[in-house]
Amino acid sequence: MSDLPSIADLIKKTSANTAIGLPTSSTKLEDKMLEVRLQEKEDQAKAKAQSLGVPYVNLKGFPISPEAISLVPLEQAQELKTVCFLHTGPELRLGALEPKDEKIQELLFQLTERYKANGEAYQVSQESLRLAMKTYETLPKFKLIIKGVKITDTELDKFQSAVATFADIQKTIQSASITDVMTIIIAAALKFNSSDIHIEAEEEKITIRFRLDGVLQDVANLPHESWKKIIARIKLISGLKINVTERPQDGRFTIFMKTGDTDVRVSTIPTNWGESVVMRILKASTINVPFSDLGWRPLLEKKILKEIEKPHGMIITTGPTGSGKTTTLYAVLKKLNQPDVKIITLEDPIEYKVEGLNQSQVDASKNYTFAGGLRSILRQDPDIIMVGEIRDLETAETAINAALTGHLLFSTIHTNSAAGALPRFLSMGVKPFLLAPALNAIIGQRLVRKVCQQCKTDDVIEPERLEEIKKILGGISPASGETVPDLNNLKFYKGAGCEVCNKTGFKGRVGIYEVFLMDDVIRAAMSENISEYDVQKLAIEQGLVTMAQDGLLKALDGMTSVDEVFRTAGGI
Image 1 (cartoon, rainbow, N blue to C red):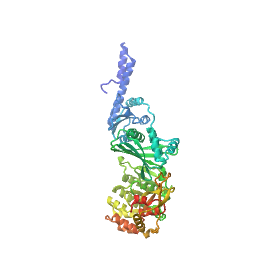
Image 2 (image 1 turned 90 degrees about the vertical axis):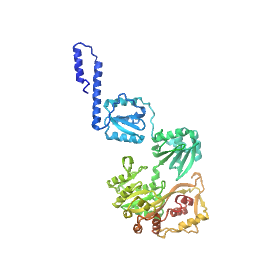
Image 3 (image 1 turned 45 degrees about the horizontal axis):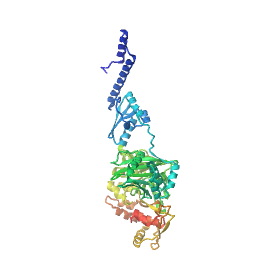
Image 4 (image 1 turned 90 degrees about the horizontal axis):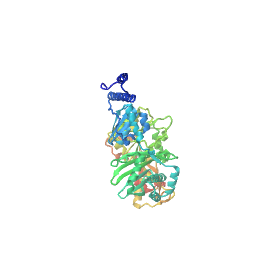
């Protein structure tokens, strides 16, 4: 500033020139004065940057690319007084009047996370920001892109009426545009009540498959040359980076309909011939299953109701991915959801929003983990807590402490059976003397397909398989209260296949369960060396009905088939 004339000096010089009759130019004078003022503002911004400990930049003449400026919408840029002036891929820079402001820092975090870039917020002056904002005027006027697929009821009816069978899907998409292809696929998935859409690039084709009642079904193929357009469309509506093909990406979009919006979670991974895409359809109806409709046998339902009505303790559900654990937990929580009860959930991610529940999502990038989140939840004075999954010792110990201090806690753990949960906890490092009094019950479960009632017919069982069935059913513990069926008069059913079930023989799914209740005998036997076999043996003596036994009893009732029970539960 010392080598620049002040505004006062310029005024004096002008006055002197006028007094001696030298020519002056008011325009040149005003320009010079403006230049001085702007330089003073830049110096002030630079000084502010130094005091805040942030970098400074003058954006006058800075080549801001359309790709960079468009990362922050104009309305948001105006509101926060910020602009993205640089984005090279690995590097991202914001310019702001208040770079330390929480909203600016949150925006920077979101952008760097979304685009996997290193980011920094720079101090800029008001004039610098004004000039940068002019870049928005140079952007092409693109049509607003909605992050989702807007399907009207008319379109839905049109496409769903055209796809009565899987073969119809292939015929319909062959002559459709890429935009319509996606709409047709989604409309068909909704019609057939699919839980997942799989789109996979192969060497000579693109395979489209639906997961129906837990089983994948091929529904259509597309030529491989259309892959780039298909994947670009999926990534566009899912908010994924179109040019990133060498690493996994996760996104989400919404299907907008008058009858209600449906969220879709998208996952992509690189493969030999392109990428594999899985779209999980998150329908609210999935978790609106009443507790009594989950498939409990009467005696088992009575036992589990007694456990969930206890004021404290842990109830754990076990099973592989897709075994219905989330549906079971939500059904339990909805049954317990009352105005005088505070329920907090900790999920990864929040897939379904439920009225009355306080749902929180973990975020490892912000160090908000299951363990850390659970400790924070305990300070909220909840009555009931649901933790999405117990994965490590820290989370397990925090959950156990919550159960021992007056909270009813629900969670999941990945094991093959209810009995396997105890050794799994112990392998994490949990102390048996803490785990034993904290646990109330462990629910092991699978989902089996229900026999289609429209084409239900008798099933003929091979002699070897029949002997195995008799052995399993004959092993039902007298302590369970269940009546062992007449092993010499067993009758089972299957679906022959019809239009209603799309020739599969199955329509819908139901749970098969085993509920392992903690009692004094099992608590006394708890040690660091107890095995799954030992736990299973004790549990059966105390009245456990295994998943295989529960499944076969449901098969005798005509709910499912023998093959389906053995496919999902084996002989466990």
